[in-house]
Image (cartoon, rainbow, N blue to C red; front, side, top):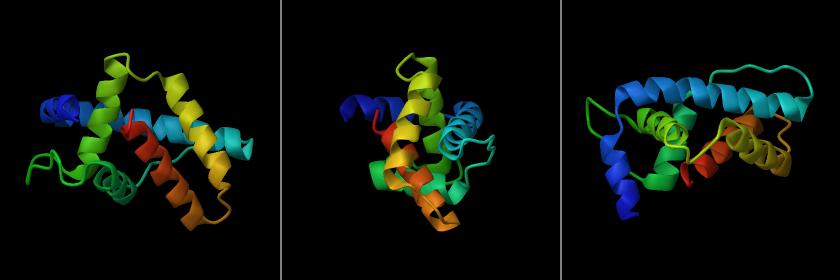
Amino acid sequence: MKEKSKVIGKLDKNLAKLGDAIINFVISAALTVFYRKPTGLKVKNETLKRAWLSVYGRTGIKRGFMSPQDLAEAYIAYLWLNNKLSIENAVEVCVKRIFEIGPSSRNEIEKAIQACIEDLLKI
């Protein structure tokens, strides 16, 4: 966790912007595989926030600077930029999780998305 704390301290808003695009693509791609039809969505900030707090608690949160949702996005971007996570692997992780949960309602989809993000944040 010490190494992750160092990484978390380096996260910023620019990484969060990139991470936003990565997360939205990965989740959309995974849902496309699950539903067998093109699906595109924007992951809700509340979902990102819950995922970060579930995995890291309040670590890295800086009032007025880095929110939990920004940290989740920035961390995913950091992993990708540093070759610790490929887009293909991220999609595979999420597809596996979504098929395990088998969401049928909007609420279950949100829970599945949160579980996917939690899995990615643990990498």
